[in-house]
Image 1 (tube, rainbow, N blue to C red):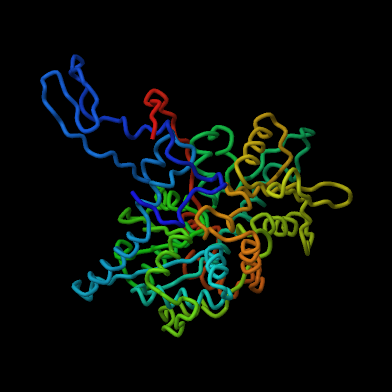
Image 2 (tube, rainbow, N blue to C red; image 1 turned 60 degrees about the vertical axis):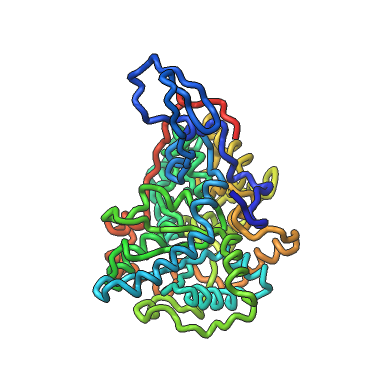
Length: 482
């Protein structure tokens, strides 16, 4: 298969090529009853003892195979791009438009595109636009292609941040608030919003890490549950009649969307049908929009039923890292909830490199809790070693597989210099800051969608998930060369 010039492996280590341990090509579901059968492998066929020739089917590796197989640690870029790319998006939206022309009015349908803030910042830097102009033009562009609604996933990040902060407060109260143990070892609560990290944990270090992982969904997964649950019911559209596409900074988000846990309640469809990386979406822009910088952004707004919840002209950001600011928000929230301390700013202390930073809450010369940012697999492996040997000093860790976090994700636009990379970060943080709990329409959406509380049974289903170990199949592994 051919790849565009924008799709290439970089120095990031959050994804790898298909592993030599990938078991898919050598799995054969045929009966093994005839043990005397002698086979000779050839490029196109297998000769049996009976001289019968059989043409082999091409090997097909799906995203589900990648998740179920214990061969690779994280994702295979070729699989991700082949199954969820620009061609698939354009085909999906064309089929959607054609279906709408022939299907009865009683069977409504909906096409939704959700854009992450990190992807938006990368596109803004690429086209030398402000974040606000970029959002308006992106919304107008996807609607010009045939989409009905364009969402900014900031609202989903707010829910993810709030749920994570509440989870940590409960975790700390249960394990450490009145603890009299003198042990220096701490079992931290670790974020699980990075799919490359989650995939690594489930396949390689599940015994140690899964019990410590936060159960809160990522912003993409929460946006998926919102679209296929809230929008489905509000607009009276069956979940399987909704197409939901997300634009994300990371190829591994495609793997996340393929998890069996992220199906609709009735099992009829995935909550996110297709994921495009930022660079893949730019390919679509280059093909379909010759002058995106001057694209007319006066297209009609989102559906009226969403106008009292989302204001396309009122974008905002969070404090903290470019990966969602989880440590920053959890730190301040926990300080207030646990110790009634108001923290205006968090002081970070870099360790061996800028991708491992620590923050401590100190009061009356006592360390109340200790948190860390941990980005990139080299730092992650050091963290796991400390946990294994009982020398971890952190109560909470924000983990991302990509060095420098989500703003430098593997799916972001490449071919730009370091100065432009800094511009991406500046653009990301250029919006006004609003605390997740102070979002004007938060309570309105909690009441309408989650039964009035973040602790409700509905909120638990929509905002949280579970993780499980992927069993090793060493007996099935061969030393294959790709």
